[in-house]
Image (cartoon, rainbow, N blue to C red; front, top):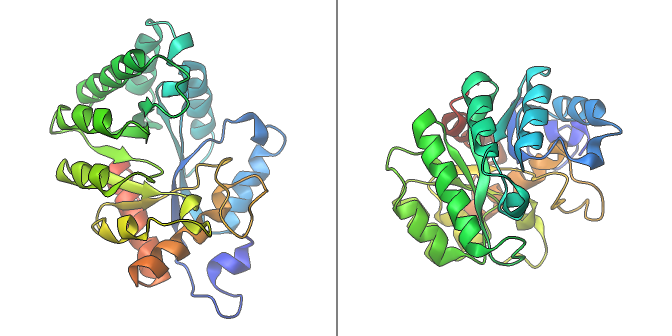
Length: 273
């Protein structure tokens, strides 16, 4: 999305606020190695002033923290994705704890959770690491970014048994209303990605069901590129298309959704806008 599209200078499109928040992307991914700085500049030009880059393992957590330290408006997380837990030594949890304790730019634990669709790691090991992340976040007073795919019952069980003081987010939500209702009952935040822009997306009921103070938007870049850019690498500058789809489905203004999702992301991550 070019700056004119996001700021509303193009004819027929509602103006977005000057400050937009991409709550979840992966800027340390190798697909950004050739032009990472220009991707961030492009996002800033498009009004995306706040970004959280999400970690997949300890090495990625360290890279994300270093990137965030060097860039205003960028923060990071620390954690091990469920795809990665099989190859992760238990001792890496200490490294994640140290990083999250010592680096102010690390604002959450994760992403963690359960993925029973790909099953890249044994399910019981995924559960164990999810529980470890929840306990660590509780110790450190940080929120938790949750990945859940084809694992609704187990996810519900674990979030219901998590400490009540934890701030949790169900990221890139595409699951059933059962998981959504269970998550909202535990005061989870819920984030939607470019998937909601796809022609075959049928989850508008979920988008409408999330309270206005709990909904976030994300790109999950470089994955899940929104329409009309399918086939290209996703970038934080495209998050405005997610905002537009949320606004349309909820019958709200684009500007209002942009402001609300930015405020909610700031609240979840304890970041000052």
